[in-house]
Image (cartoon, rainbow, N blue to C red; front, side, top):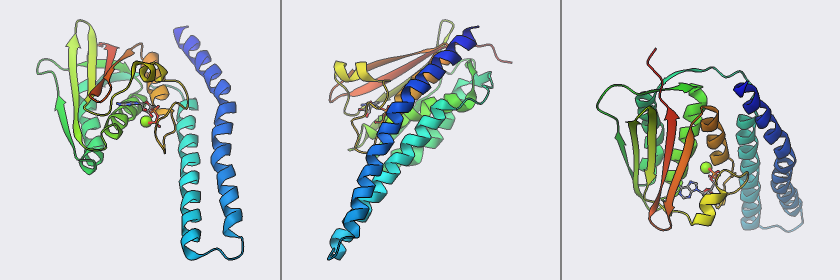
Length: 230
Ligand code: ADP
Ligand code: MG
């Protein structure tokens, strides 16, 4: 029953979003059309030609990103609910983010609970996607380097995961817009990543808390039901 409610809610969101997705994709396509037009005009010098071409690539890349993010939200393939080893996922996330962090001069720290293993339940692939979206944002919030900390802990019967960055932070107004479709402050952003993460964690019956201070950094805390090991 719960499962059905979540699914129909999601379908409603997906269909409501279809119109705005179309709009968001039309913008870059319109830009590309315009620049192709300019490319074909007589007397375009080499420098302009390269400039127009690069804009076309950037805009098409943006359209592609929006489509792939939207599709991953709309994916209706059956959920495979399994027991997830939270510590193993923190290690996986560390490995995935390592190169990206190094490229951006960011120190990556991971801290796992030293006691018994920690488990939760859900679709592992989607859970990974939720974590990657949040981790990527944390790195992107630190263009001049910083520290990204991943920490897992057991809190009563909850598996808790903190993703903390020392990046640009957000104002309370910005925090409250998190998770709404197409809210992005990035030139190449899709504004879908956080929404997807929120919806995945909600489906796992968990919640996401965000604490942020402008200029100081942001902490995302994921609180998930703890599951027994299988
Ligand atoms: P995108 O990353 O494509 O912009 P998201 O939905 O992933 O879209 O994020 C939406 C916006 O939320 C970002 O553009 C950014 O302004 C803000 N945001 C998310 N995470 C952080 C963070 N850790 N630090 C600062 N701002 C963040
Ligand atoms: Mg993002």
